[in-house]
Length: 146
Image 1 (cartoon, rainbow, N blue to C red):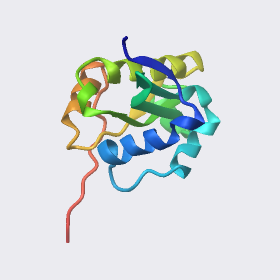
Image 2 (tube, rainbow, N blue to C red):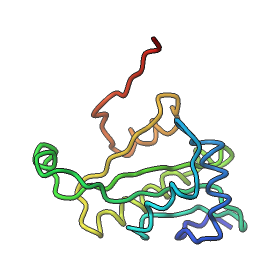
Image 3 (cartoon, one colour):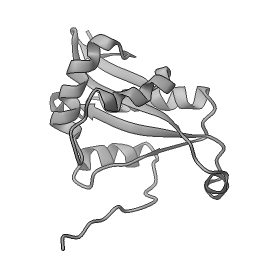
Image 4 (cartoon, rainbow, N blue to C red):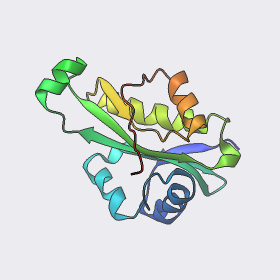
């Protein structure tokens, strides 16, 4: 049976947080409160399920972007891909691509004409997927220890 992409349900909270904190944690722990942003765009939260087990997820929402920036970006509505994670055993199998395509499709249906995301420099597999799907690098976030 293939991996199924379906909408997030409340019962998915614990496995989603487990995946987020084990495989997608960037600068801190992802909490249930962090998932609250999805309440504003319920069609923006998807999970990948294999035999009853959550093996990946993606969620996003619409960014409030000032008009001047929208003009610069030549965009009218911007979807933010907030967080995505796929269990390592499922990477390279199309699960991440399916999740991201589902979210991007929902953004488009809701009127977005641009999607943005952040990717940790160490997430080379994710970066390769984003490159392959046509995302362009628009900035580098850097830090220097003093």
